[in-house]
Length: 217
Ligand SMILES: [Zn+2]
Ligand SMILES: [Zn+2]
Image 1 (spheres, protein in one colour):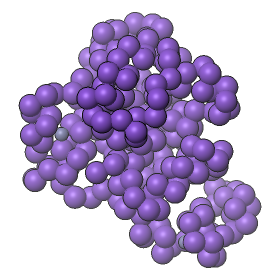
Image 2: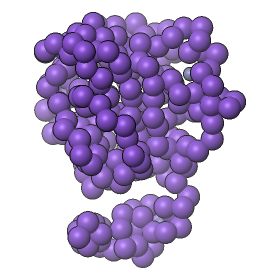
Image 3: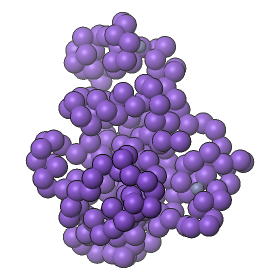
Protein backbone atom coordinates (compact mmCIF):
# COMPACT_ATOMS: atom_id res chain seq x y z
CA UNK A 1 0.00 0.00 0.00
CA UNK A 2 2.72 2.42 1.04
CA UNK A 3 4.79 1.55 -2.02
CA UNK A 4 1.82 2.01 -4.31
CA UNK A 5 1.05 5.37 -2.74
CA UNK A 6 4.66 6.48 -3.07
CA UNK A 7 4.95 5.37 -6.65
CA UNK A 8 1.73 7.25 -7.40
CA UNK A 9 3.14 10.36 -5.74
CA UNK A 10 6.52 10.15 -7.39
CA UNK A 11 5.43 8.70 -10.70
CA UNK A 12 7.48 5.56 -10.10
CA UNK A 13 10.78 7.38 -10.43
CA UNK A 14 13.58 7.51 -7.89
CA UNK A 15 13.63 10.68 -5.85
CA UNK A 16 17.39 10.99 -6.20
CA UNK A 17 18.36 9.72 -9.68
CA UNK A 18 14.94 9.75 -11.40
CA UNK A 19 15.48 6.17 -12.52
CA UNK A 20 12.69 3.59 -12.21
CA UNK A 21 11.76 2.90 -8.60
CA UNK A 22 8.99 1.08 -6.80
CA UNK A 23 9.27 3.27 -3.72
CA UNK A 24 10.77 6.67 -3.03
CA UNK A 25 14.27 5.46 -3.93
CA UNK A 26 15.54 2.94 -6.45
CA UNK A 27 17.45 -0.04 -5.04
CA UNK A 28 20.83 1.48 -6.01
CA UNK A 29 20.20 4.84 -4.33
CA UNK A 30 18.76 3.10 -1.30
CA UNK A 31 21.93 1.01 -1.04
CA UNK A 32 24.03 4.17 -1.34
CA UNK A 33 22.37 6.06 1.50
CA UNK A 34 25.16 7.07 3.91
CA UNK A 35 23.90 4.97 6.82
CA UNK A 36 25.77 5.51 10.06
CA UNK A 37 27.07 2.08 10.86
CA UNK A 38 30.56 2.88 12.13
CA UNK A 39 31.20 2.99 15.89
CA UNK A 40 29.65 6.19 17.23
CA UNK A 41 29.66 8.00 20.53
CA UNK A 42 26.36 6.96 22.15
CA UNK A 43 25.88 10.45 23.47
CA UNK A 44 26.46 12.67 20.41
CA UNK A 45 26.58 10.18 17.50
CA UNK A 46 29.95 11.34 16.21
CA UNK A 47 32.49 8.71 15.26
CA UNK A 48 34.28 7.28 18.26
CA UNK A 49 36.59 4.27 18.51
CA UNK A 50 34.78 1.18 19.86
CA UNK A 51 31.62 3.23 20.28
CA UNK A 52 32.83 4.75 23.55
CA UNK A 53 31.69 8.14 24.85
CA UNK A 54 33.86 10.65 22.96
CA UNK A 55 36.35 13.10 24.42
CA UNK A 56 34.16 16.11 23.72
CA UNK A 57 31.20 14.62 25.59
CA UNK A 58 33.49 13.62 28.48
CA UNK A 59 34.99 17.11 28.74
CA UNK A 60 31.74 18.97 28.44
CA UNK A 61 28.75 16.68 28.84
CA UNK A 62 25.75 17.80 26.82
CA UNK A 63 22.34 18.04 28.48
CA UNK A 64 21.02 15.17 26.35
CA UNK A 65 21.86 11.62 27.36
CA UNK A 66 22.01 9.84 24.03
CA UNK A 67 21.68 10.35 20.28
CA UNK A 68 20.50 7.99 17.59
CA UNK A 69 21.23 9.16 14.05
CA UNK A 70 20.24 7.30 10.89
CA UNK A 71 22.36 8.89 8.18
CA UNK A 72 25.43 11.02 7.66
CA UNK A 73 24.42 14.43 6.29
CA UNK A 74 25.98 13.74 2.91
CA UNK A 75 24.55 13.17 -0.55
CA UNK A 76 21.88 11.94 -1.05
CA UNK A 77 20.75 12.24 2.59
CA UNK A 78 21.20 16.02 2.45
CA UNK A 79 19.05 16.20 -0.69
CA UNK A 80 16.29 14.22 1.02
CA UNK A 81 16.37 16.37 4.15
CA UNK A 82 16.34 19.60 2.15
CA UNK A 83 13.45 18.37 0.02
CA UNK A 84 11.46 17.71 3.17
CA UNK A 85 12.48 20.92 4.87
CA UNK A 86 12.37 23.48 2.08
CA UNK A 87 10.28 22.03 -0.72
CA UNK A 88 7.37 20.49 1.12
CA UNK A 89 8.15 16.94 -0.02
CA UNK A 90 6.40 15.41 2.97
CA UNK A 91 6.61 11.89 1.54
CA UNK A 92 10.29 11.93 2.48
CA UNK A 93 9.40 11.93 6.19
CA UNK A 94 8.29 8.26 6.39
CA UNK A 95 11.48 7.19 4.62
CA UNK A 96 13.67 9.09 7.11
CA UNK A 97 11.60 7.74 10.01
CA UNK A 98 11.97 4.15 8.81
CA UNK A 99 15.76 4.56 8.61
CA UNK A 100 15.90 5.20 12.35
CA UNK A 101 15.07 1.51 12.80
CA UNK A 102 13.72 0.02 16.00
CA UNK A 103 13.59 2.63 18.68
CA UNK A 104 13.41 2.05 22.42
CA UNK A 105 10.24 2.87 24.31
CA UNK A 106 10.01 6.34 25.82
CA UNK A 107 7.27 8.20 27.68
CA UNK A 108 7.10 11.22 25.44
CA UNK A 109 8.25 12.08 21.90
CA UNK A 110 8.81 15.77 21.17
CA UNK A 111 9.75 17.15 17.73
CA UNK A 112 12.11 20.14 17.88
CA UNK A 113 9.60 22.98 17.74
CA UNK A 114 9.63 25.81 15.23
CA UNK A 115 8.68 29.32 16.24
CA UNK A 116 5.09 30.24 15.43
CA UNK A 117 6.26 32.58 12.73
CA UNK A 118 8.44 29.96 11.04
CA UNK A 119 5.67 27.39 11.29
CA UNK A 120 3.26 29.79 9.62
CA UNK A 121 5.74 30.47 6.79
CA UNK A 122 6.54 26.82 6.18
CA UNK A 123 3.12 25.39 6.92
CA UNK A 124 4.53 22.31 8.67
CA UNK A 125 7.31 21.29 11.01
CA UNK A 126 9.64 18.84 9.28
CA UNK A 127 10.73 17.33 12.61
CA UNK A 128 7.09 16.70 13.54
CA UNK A 129 6.50 15.05 10.16
CA UNK A 130 9.35 12.62 10.84
CA UNK A 131 8.16 12.00 14.41
CA UNK A 132 4.61 11.28 13.28
CA UNK A 133 5.90 8.70 10.80
CA UNK A 134 7.64 6.68 13.52
CA UNK A 135 5.68 3.51 14.15
CA UNK A 136 3.86 3.17 17.46
CA UNK A 137 4.81 6.64 18.60
CA UNK A 138 2.49 9.21 20.11
CA UNK A 139 3.89 12.64 19.36
CA UNK A 140 3.56 15.48 21.81
CA UNK A 141 4.06 18.52 19.59
CA UNK A 142 2.86 20.99 22.21
CA UNK A 143 4.87 20.06 25.31
CA UNK A 144 7.50 22.55 24.29
CA UNK A 145 7.53 25.70 22.19
CA UNK A 146 10.14 27.82 20.54
CA UNK A 147 10.01 31.37 21.77
CA UNK A 148 12.17 32.80 19.02
CA UNK A 149 13.85 31.70 15.85
CA UNK A 150 17.61 32.09 15.87
CA UNK A 151 19.63 32.95 12.77
CA UNK A 152 20.62 29.85 10.79
CA UNK A 153 23.11 27.88 12.89
CA UNK A 154 25.11 26.80 9.86
CA UNK A 155 26.56 30.30 9.53
CA UNK A 156 27.93 30.60 13.04
CA UNK A 157 30.99 29.30 14.91
CA UNK A 158 30.29 26.83 17.72
CA UNK A 159 30.41 29.24 20.68
CA UNK A 160 28.12 31.65 18.90
CA UNK A 161 25.64 28.85 18.18
CA UNK A 162 25.29 28.11 21.86
CA UNK A 163 24.63 31.75 22.70
CA UNK A 164 22.34 31.94 19.70
CA UNK A 165 19.92 29.33 21.07
CA UNK A 166 20.10 30.14 24.79
CA UNK A 167 16.55 30.49 26.12
CA UNK A 168 14.99 29.66 22.74
CA UNK A 169 12.61 27.01 24.14
CA UNK A 170 9.94 26.89 26.80
CA UNK A 171 8.02 23.89 28.16
CA UNK A 172 4.27 24.27 28.41
CA UNK A 173 3.80 21.48 30.94
CA UNK A 174 5.69 19.43 33.50
CA UNK A 175 7.72 16.48 32.22
CA UNK A 176 8.45 15.22 35.72
CA UNK A 177 9.75 11.66 35.76
CA UNK A 178 9.49 11.15 32.01
CA UNK A 179 11.97 9.62 29.59
CA UNK A 180 11.76 11.90 26.56
CA UNK A 181 12.87 11.48 22.95
CA UNK A 182 13.49 14.55 20.80
CA UNK A 183 13.12 14.22 17.03
CA UNK A 184 14.94 16.41 14.52
CA UNK A 185 15.84 16.28 10.84
CA UNK A 186 19.51 17.29 11.12
CA UNK A 187 21.92 17.51 14.03
CA UNK A 188 24.83 19.83 13.31
CA UNK A 189 26.85 20.94 16.34
CA UNK A 190 24.15 19.78 18.71
CA UNK A 191 23.84 23.26 20.27
CA UNK A 192 20.09 23.46 19.57
CA UNK A 193 19.46 19.94 20.89
CA UNK A 194 21.62 20.68 23.92
CA UNK A 195 19.57 23.76 24.75
CA UNK A 196 16.31 21.91 24.18
CA UNK A 197 17.43 19.03 26.42
CA UNK A 198 18.41 21.52 29.10
CA UNK A 199 14.92 23.04 28.91
CA UNK A 200 13.21 19.62 29.05
CA UNK A 201 15.26 18.60 32.08
CA UNK A 202 14.38 21.84 33.84
CA UNK A 203 10.76 20.77 33.30
CA UNK A 204 11.56 17.49 35.05
CA UNK A 205 12.54 15.08 32.25
CA UNK A 206 14.58 12.18 33.64
CA UNK A 207 16.38 11.50 30.39
CA UNK A 208 16.51 13.00 26.91
CA UNK A 209 17.46 11.01 23.81
CA UNK A 210 17.83 12.57 20.37
CA UNK A 211 16.46 10.72 17.37
CA UNK A 212 17.79 12.50 14.29
CA UNK A 213 17.50 11.58 10.63
CA UNK A 214 20.92 12.94 9.67
CA UNK A 215 24.10 13.93 11.44
CA UNK A 216 26.81 16.25 10.12
CA UNK A 217 30.18 14.65 10.80
ZN1 LIG B 1 17.94 6.18 -7.69
ZN1 LIG C 1 30.19 12.37 22.02
